[in-house]
Image 1: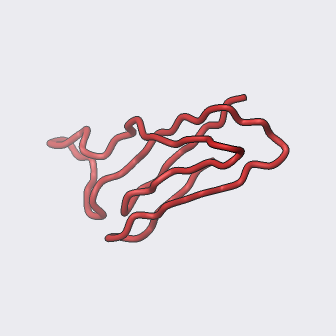
Image 2: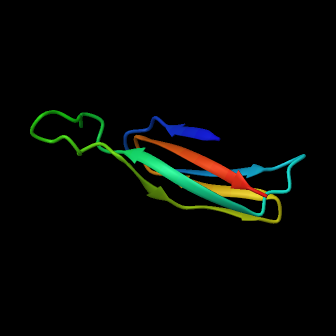
Length: 77
């Protein structure tokens, strides 16, 4: 699942019920930085993918999206 928070100032709390799939755990990666950030020759690693957290509890996935971020969540059986 890939989720995006387009807000420049507010985080988003996401809670999704999972149907038809017995997810037991979740892992997540995030791409985030301030809206004008970019990678260039002087700052080749400013915007990068990092580990993030997501959880599964009672068939519900929960993840927090910081402002200006894209998060990939992988569900495992």
